[in-house]
Amino acid sequence: MKAAILHKPHTRVSVEDVDIESPHEGEVLLDIVGAGVCHSDYHYVDGHVKPRALPLVMGHEGAGIVREVGPGVTSVQVGDKIVLSLDAMCGYCRNCSEGSPALCETHQGGVPSRISKNGTIYHHGRPTYTEQSVVLADACVKVPDDTDLRIACLISCGVITGIGAVVNRAKVEAGATMAVFGCGGVGLNVIQGGVLASAGKIIAVDKVPYKLELAEQFGATHFVNADREDPVQRIREITGGGADYAFEVVGFPALVRQAFASVRMTGAAIVVGVQPTGEDISVDGADLLRDRAIMGSWHGAARARVDFLWILDLYRQGKIKLDELISRFRPLDEINEAFEDMVQGKVARTVLVFD
Image (tube, rainbow, N blue to C red; front, side, top):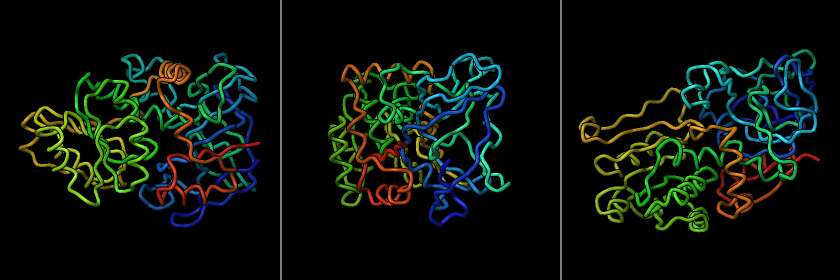
């Protein structure tokens, strides 16, 4: 099968023929149907995040159809349509039992590598930039047979990460004000989360006019071009002293500090963007004493088996947008072009599709 492989940061990703094993106990082999192209993957390419090991089979956001199940798997069967969760959920550890399955303690490491080439192990998590993928059954969320997986694949990470940061993690109240720093694929879903939560003001912050236009389409009420004005000052003006919540959805400590500075006393800055490996975030300690908070948000605090189906229901009812998130479909061979479109701010999301 073909897969997108990163051999070294700051180089182009290569699409190669590789070998994949049959699933082991508790694992599932998927034929991937759709995979969202996310900045989290590109961060391995540009050096923002250091890979645990190379060569790396890329991708994490996707959906597919079960081709084969390993021993002991009863939760899904051959032919089932699956939206893949970024996190596997055992259902029994402390975090799963307390309602935080996105941080399952049992499955922190994922599966051992099942992909190789000429005897060389190719490392991976739950890869989706690949025609097939071996994943834990506990990371598979079965969806209805009539689900279009080319669209629903976005729920896997980008959609739930954004909506969940608002609804599950921050628990934004009706009427609250919120700012969103970064209006890419995940940021647009933070905005959608604000709409679902009935936020009073949703302030979109970005440097790319196209993304601010998208933010309006997805429900933002106010817009700040950070290239033209100070976003902190402008947010304070719009809200009369500071937002109740500010979401950093890019992945830079300086933007986390801006988000923190833009919230009022008792407000919270929520860190959604993947931060650079090894870098710290610092804020004025006196501001923390005034009941301001910095809050991390992993995968939207997702309860994947519940939230994915809930989001699908909202989509079918016309209450959230998924089709509008997809700017372009591309084949796997065009992964580098998809990354270039994303970096240049030309797309909300590209989806890789597999014939």
